[in-house]
Figure 1 (tube, chains in turn green, purple):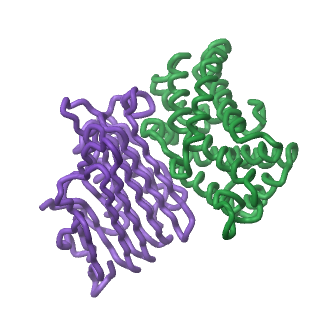
Figure 2 (cartoon, each protein chain N blue to C red):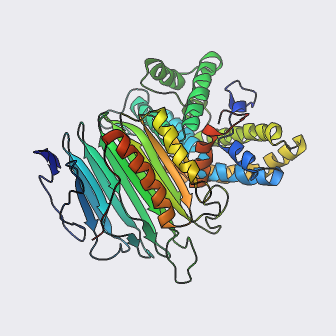
Figure 3 (cartoon, rainbow over the protein chains, first blue to last red):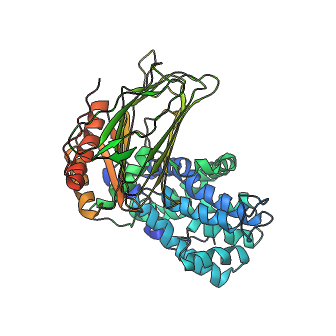
Length: 232
Length: 263
């Protein structure tokens, strides 16, 4: 699931990094790492990272899968997943970012059903089939992991690190930087991901989608950038 | 608010505590009513809680603004919370164009805006955050500014805008944040008439200003658009926001430019 070659289409998305590339702000190993750290700390943590944790916890909680009726944990069950799914879609303001979560989500739902099926994933995928959910990658990831007994904290770290890896590979091709430089960035990002996971542990649903203005403007501007290599 | 004989009027109005509204104005012949919110205390204090509820009945049309900038004084112990709940009935319209926010050194300000609307409703929400105020004139000396806007349509969340500005130890100047700029403006417009052509025209307005502003516009999940603008002064950023609002007022309502007489 964390293999960067998993065919979800992550190779096609930079989440606004390509705009910085075109501006000349990101042009080498150091500037790429600076952007990557900002992206992880000020967007990924509050969106996908938090969604992985909340999805995993909602399915691991007792009473999950049977709706959040009276007396049950409101953070559990399919009703909460439907709400989380709608919020994940609504919080992604730049339309390319929203679309990326959706396309990769659809791929991950298919892959999960084929190779790692389980009850949490299946109930979410059924909602996506029915059109009640959009199907987001981070939620699907959290559910697949929970179906197979992986604790939420490990799932969050794994998701963050595989996103960082995919972005590093795109930087190697897009900037370009050398393969060794890419590996150095990954090495440096390891402790960063650990801190990000700890931060996610403290967040609540109200924090979902918090973002900083510069990152978001770059993601919006990417929509009308000429000659782009990436879809976001 | 409700429409009565071609003009929108307040059918019920209530306030308690330090927020007031000035008497209504009609700025043009459209029937749209304009109200300005006033804080006679001059600014928000630590621990203050403000709550505004707006209900627009079907067909009502309201332009809401503020009398002056919102100042948030230092919050050494707690924080200041401004909550706004908006209910927009079918075919109603709200334009909310407040003055800028000025957060003082050590201020912690949370603004939560919840809008419940219908597919036929028209919504314009703007915000402008300055680098704040500090005795030394240094920018970004506030502790936290968070503007969270949650829009739902027919009961489902459709747009969540959660702008979080926490200078911390590293300040806010760098990559990903203000990138050398000092002021941030946001504009959310949800309207059934919004389409790709309107978005393209809005982008053209922003491109004309790209020598002094950095801005992005994007389509929202329901017909509408979201804008984020970075600039170096309140007049520069608010001019861009007003230009976009005016373009769409003309296009969708055949209405002239907003002319907010401050009194």
